[in-house]
Structures are given as C-alpha cells and as structure tokens.
Length: 250
Ligand code: NAD
Image (cartoon, rainbow, N blue to C red):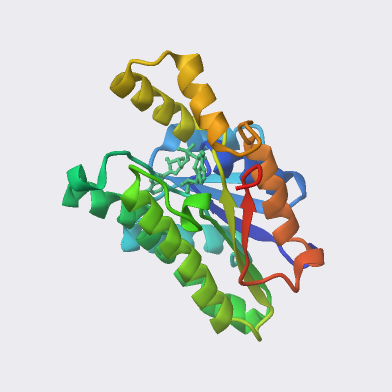
C-alpha cells in the first residue's frame, strides 16, 4: 500500500464503514469519513489522528462536491474510495411505496455512483486507485420483502462491473464486497422491525438473521474490513471487477 495516501469512506460513522475506516487509519492511511450526522463521525475520529470527519449526504451532488473539495484540498486526492453508505427497509413488494423505492435506490445506488464519480478521472490520470463498493449478497441473489434493497444492490454490482471495465488499463481496481448479515446498527434496526412486526423476542429475531447466513453465525464488521484491506493492498492489484461474498457460504 506504498503509494496510497488518502481514503474516503462513506457512512464511516458506524458499522462496516467505521471498521473499514479504523483499519485503513491503522495502516497509516489518512481517512476522511463522511455521513449525514456529525456526532457519530466525530466519535470515530476523536483520538485518531488519521481519521477526519466531514458531514456529507451521498444523495446530494453538491454536498459530495463540497466534501471532495475540502478533504482533497486538505489531504490530497483520494486514492481509495469505499462507497459504503446504505440504508434498508422491508415490506412486501406490493406494499412498497414509490417514496420508499426512491429513497433506497437514491442512497444505495445513486449515492454510490455520486460517491465515486469525482474520483474516477484523477485516479485514472495518476494511474493508481482503489474503489470498493460495499454491496450485499442481496446484490447477487433475490430475497423476500426487500425488493428496493435487492434491486439497488444488484445495481451496485452492475455499476462496479461497468467501472471496472472502463478503468481496466489504468491501474485502478474496482470491486464489490457482498456481505451476508453483519452485526451492525443496520442489523439492530432490522431486528427491531422484526420484533415489532412479528412479536418475536430479541434473541429469536437475532437468531433468525444469523440462521439466514448458511453457517448460522452473524458476520463481524471487522471481517468485512479485512477483505477491504486486502482489496486495497498491493497484493490485490490484479483483482478487479469482482463481487466477493462474505456470507458464511451464501
Ligand atoms: P449502518 O447503518 O451502521 O451504516 C450505514 C451508514 O450509512 C450509516 O453510518 C449512515 O449514517 C450512512 N448513511 C445512510 N444514508 C446516508 C446518506 N444519504 N449519506 C451519507 N451517509 C449515509 O449499517 P452497516 O451494516 O454498517 O451498512 C454499511 C453498508 O453495508 C450498507 O451499504 C449496507 O447496505 C451494507 N450491508 C450491510 C449488511 C448488514 O447485515 N449489516 C449486509 C450486507 C450489506
């Protein structure tokens, strides 16, 4: 990772994004974490001189432009971008409102595009760069009651493949990590929704999610971060266009 100095991690204030940011920072890379709320970002940055918090909404083009201007102005161009910010909801498809559909697609797919787009030209010109999308196993197969989420994550895998093809000869790699259920704030929210809708207790709801991973265990955010660290390492220079499942066998 000799030549890589500055990383952007969207949604870096919690869960997988926080674990990725901490791992990158530990390896000596300057990390800009962004998200919509200052407090969780600052909590990750506090006491870690390699992590810098910047409030930005990935669905807002101007907000992302301001983030790039401030962060790259302060610490140099991003040579790693981890498009991690995401959101989820659940409902049968026939009850999914257009508002909900648009909201999920906006954050998960359009937001991922807006997060990486400003980095592409500069990375290609400098002949180095790493783009990592945090997609999902929902980007590789169908799942009931999460149609917009599944569609958005299939879209992210498609976007990753398109960018990888476009950047093949530039020294920039583009990959996606596709986790199964990971123990994060997003999962805690899903557990709360299941308890509310089905009347199940917390342990039963949690076990239900764990058992959806074929090996019946919840993945830890650090396991996803380890895969991201490999993808940005020198050893992975020939790995591009790949959707890597970390899913306990899904
Ligand atoms: P999380 O809720 O802890 O993280 C999501 C982050 O995205 C939060 O910090 C949130 O503030 C941020 N975010 C949401 N909307 C945003 C916006 N408009 N602009 C900027 N930031 C925004 O959950 P997580 O599990 O760490 O999720 C991270 C990624 O991993 C998501 O893309 C999610 O879809 C994906 N993922 C999660 C799981 C899981 O089981 N937890 C499984 C597969 C994939």
